[in-house]
Amino acid sequence: MRIGEFAEAAGTTAKTLRFYEEQGLLPPPDRTSSGYRDYPPDAIARVDFVHRGQAAGLTLAQIRQIVDIRDAGHAPCAHVRDLLDARLRDIEQQIAQLTALRDTIANLRDDAAHPEPETCSADQVCRYV
Image (cartoon, rainbow, N blue to C red; front, side, top):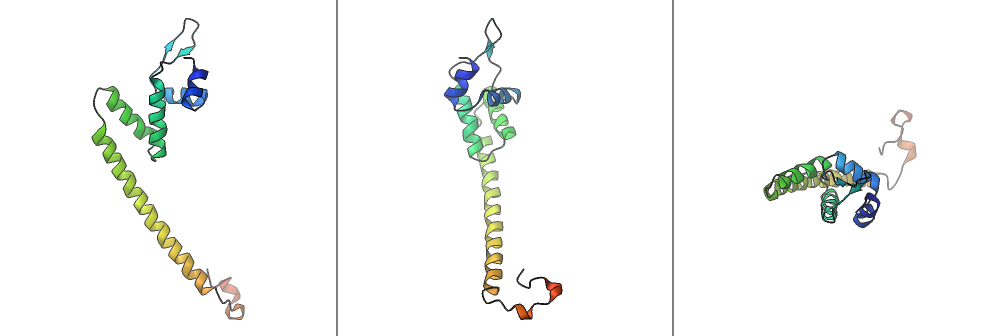
């Protein structure tokens, strides 16, 4: 199928497909005699995989690593597990940082619940922040 048909079927744009091809996420498709890209129907599954990987927070470089392992004839399961473990650690760290920030802001807000402007000095700007 030509790139426009493929883009529509894959739920993306022709520009994105060209980018994926340049990045090694999609193998170069065959070309018609007039030079148009001619994608096989199973290429949609590859684009779906890229989109699922992005939805899981993987980078395109990480997704390319997985694709390269598969294209070399090996199952990428262990590599995917390691990437997902690292992603989970990152998310847990972000959650901890956001929780600490929320607690800090809640404490500041509690302190500011009953403002006393007369107790603030001009050099402090605002004692609650």
